[in-house]
Length: 216
Image 1 (tube, rainbow, N blue to C red):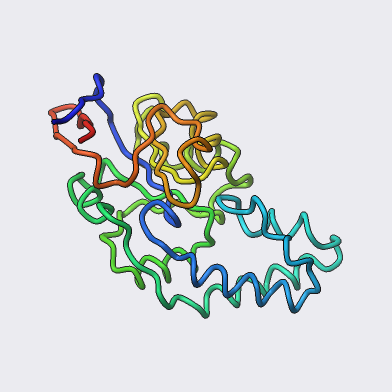
Image 2 (image 1 turned 180 degrees about the vertical axis):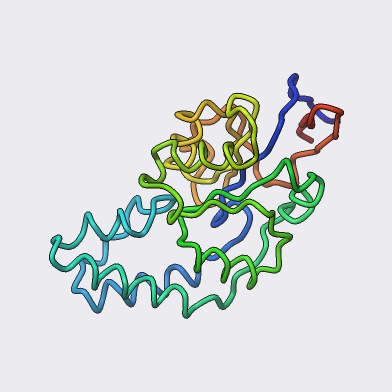
């Protein structure tokens, strides 16, 4: 049995890590090593998921050390793309949408997004917005607004799939319909219009004006 969402969408914007792919082992290895090198308390990573690395580093080190610290974590993450896998339902959902109606919007750098997409083997859209493309990252709306601009659609006609509170906050601020995906956060932590256990729970039906969604 399916439950339809009673509206038509012009485009879908997908977060990358934790929504389309599971990069957790690689992320953990990179950030743990960075933390050890930079003398961080082991608990420094609390609440970091979904935020750009540059913002996390800026919160942790003094301004005069920022460039070196950020360059190092970027180097570590780019060098480690092992164990990255596509999450359940992600490839099918991406593949069910025309390229003109889908985008990835990620807090990764452009180079890291490309490396992780390639490692996972997902069908990458033509539009991929990274932290390099906007002055402010999630939880600000700028990344999703940029994704909508590149697709030529109104944010209020778009649906965003996200696994992190920071990303959902950004999507809401942009005016998009939000779908929270359980995984990196529990269901009760996801403030979204709809929450699903995985992207396999989403069904797409194409229409002349875009597409509709239903949950199973």
